[in-house]
Image 1 (cartoon, rainbow, N blue to C red):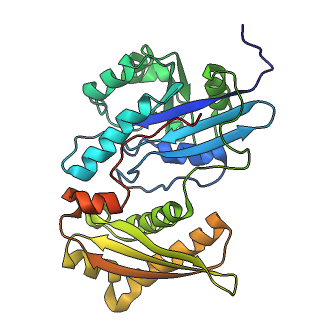
Image 2: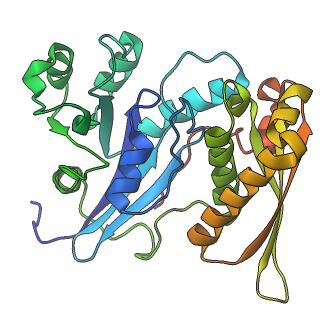
Image 3: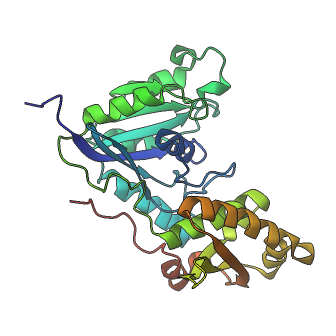
Length: 307
């Protein structure tokens, strides 16, 4: 018999289509930036754990995942497989559906995958701030979707509408047990991963068209100097010379803008002072090359539950 006063801890995998608002929702739930967010699709490439701890109540380890889409290369195959493998790790599934998305935007294959999973499932209806006086009954597709879930909760990550209600719902499905991570941790990602994700986010926001999707970032050095400041050296890889030119920009203005924005976010995220050195190199068809995928960390789908 469950003790309502006992601590609960476990994993909540966050699923959804690209640009459904999964990463924005996690940043809102934790009340700080842990996942990169952009207006472009497929910005999340690898599952990331975001840790929500409530003293006396327990701990939720959210697993942010890439959105669902049909893969066209080895990188996208990794992204899809890592999302699928993350489902097996979860105690509860959060499926984020964008209220402003067009009808029939969720493929049947994806929904079948989610509904077949044995875990409790919560339908999180996102971006409800875009709909005046939102009602789930006004959207037939969401009404049909909700029948496959244990609960349906409309939320606005930006306005923090129903975020506390969502946290309560997730805790109700977690098993009793101690915290899985130290209570002051908000992610299990290492500093190098955080740095590369911040730089990639800046590239997504500052460049346009297809360039961001051909970008990977490799951190070759992150070292604390005698002054107390950190020296960080990263390489931005692209697939074509023309993309390299776009990243560098006229008289180096674009790479400078990427560097300035990235350094500001890195210093805030890691609570350090740093000098950031950025280079741009071409690696043709790296998204299809196992060697580069391994170097960038896109080689081992899924992960293990922390005991």
